[in-house]
Image (cartoon, rainbow, N blue to C red; front, side, top):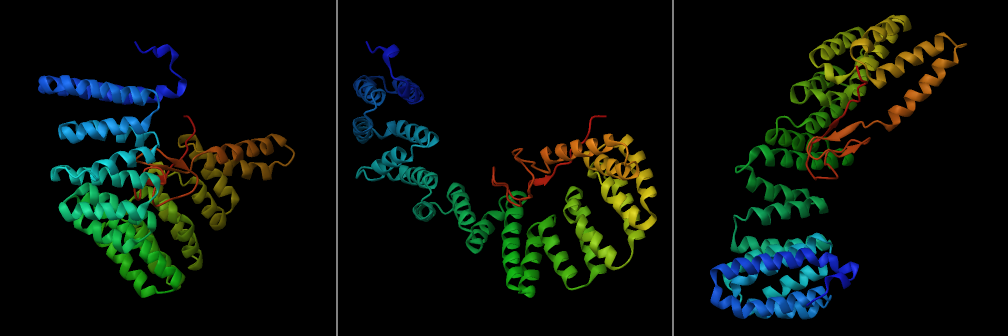
Length: 390
């Protein structure tokens, strides 16, 4: 009997493989009892090779098994997925390449094997090979969602936005709530490229196309507003910036500085104060105290800002608001070093706080991304306001 206590540490990684094969063996045994009596010895021979890290011999055994009985192909898919999950792409590729090369391969399995091999190439970073395989799958099955979604991922990675749009548009009618925002961001990428080139007309065309696919695309609105602001049309820019509240109130924080600049250019700080207070009342989770305080200081003086913050942080405490209030007090009472220490402490706390968080996967960052680096979802990284305990 095989002595498992003497197994080396590395071989423990093979245990999930063995469990998977034993389960598939049991299932096949229930439906093909007579045939399984012959296959079981070959399975155990293959498993023994795996446990002894003789991958080549194990693969030879399993390839011969599938050649004699294609119903056992699930064992290969299971083994390939385990290798891929463990980062052993070369072994996963070898399994699926071996299957696709078999002359007796039934046509019904071809697309599945091509998909699995495409996943292997993606994992290995060979995007051109993966792209070719997914395209081949679409030749056989033009409705394959898996192939189309993976082509989109490849084009995103390569920043080929035209190709990404072409594939995504085909999926739009099937699931517009998911695909629409993706297409919108692809057009925003093109709009941003046009901005860099100075092609304002094309920027506006692409940004408006983005809004047609997703009316809530804040990024497209910001691109349009920024361009109007650059051209000196502050009133028009303000109107566009403020429309973001209807799209996504939390994202208004992304354009607060731009709004401040536009109102200052128009010397309308009083109107800005009224707007911000009304905005804060409509959306208390925005935490705009420090912004409102800055506007008040310019319009009515420091004392007005202090009185506002003193009242506000009692009912809606935030690190940003408290930090600004303490900084005001520190300047008023120079002899009291406590305020200086407290200001420094709050500054450290703010540096450690998270400014943005993905609403899909929870990825946290102090840099805003339109595409989450963790889960690859568009437009899910939102401002994350850090509150103090009440």
